[in-house]
Amino acid sequence: MQTKGDQPGVITKVLYYVFLITGAIISVFPFYWMFVIGSNGRGAATRIPPVVTIGDQFVENFQRALSKTEFWTAILNSVMISSAVTLSVLLFCSLAGYAFAKYEFKFKRTLFIFVLGTLFVPTQLSVLPTYVIMAKLGWIDTYYAVIVPAMVNAFGIFWMRQYISSAVNSELLEAGRIDGAGHLHIFSKIVVPIITPAYATLGIFTFMNTWNDFFWPFVVLKDRSHYTIQIALQQLFHTRDGLDYGMILSATFMATLPLLIVFLLFSRWFIAGLTSGAVKS
Image (cartoon, rainbow, N blue to C red; front, side):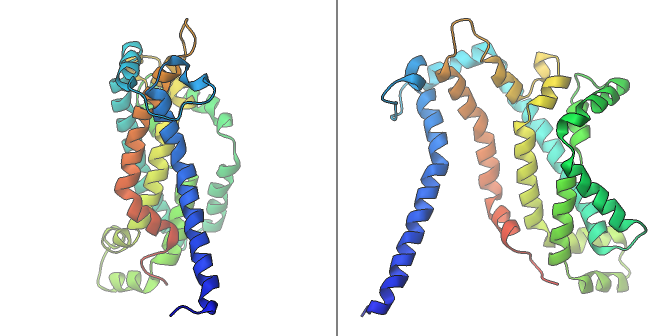
């Protein structure tokens, strides 16, 4: 039988679930609204009162977007570039983070401070020198110009260093050394299985940031066949008859689906990476 003393706990739990449900609705609503506008006519976005029901013109709107840009080619380009950048970031940042977390070497602290310092440098300041380097290498209008500069980043090194410091027990590494294992063997057999949640978290962040990047690909990619999806979507705004929000948002919705798929596939490890480590030192 429930007592009066249990009521505050029940009320707290109810408020907690109300808060979570409200937050979920607020988070999902932009995607729903994007699909609503993408499935209605051209003027649905500016209609008063606003349209809140799904229409029947999504396929028609999306077909108009396909006629104005190489949408599927851009999707494939974005998948390839985002995947390549993500895999390289996971490899190099985990190796660097492992070295900073578990090894002692000269100027270690100075180098780590330098890495963190690059986080405070605005991205725009590096555009000109990076462009000059890409031009000298003959990589302008190639995928190399987008992939290579993004193969490692300061946030990834910092994230991996912090996670490995707390999750990887130094005694495990010492036991591996006593057994005669080399550095790479210890890293691949002991460290990598432990830091899988950190890989998932950094991988999702990296894939999403690379997928959504517009400025740098727009600077270095000239051929339409090399465009990423963000540049392809930008072309839909160049119309003589005014903005067709139904067309734009139908294509935007389709361009968002790969991100949702990636997040759903790795969400379990993503949440684990944000909350805890596998082994505590």
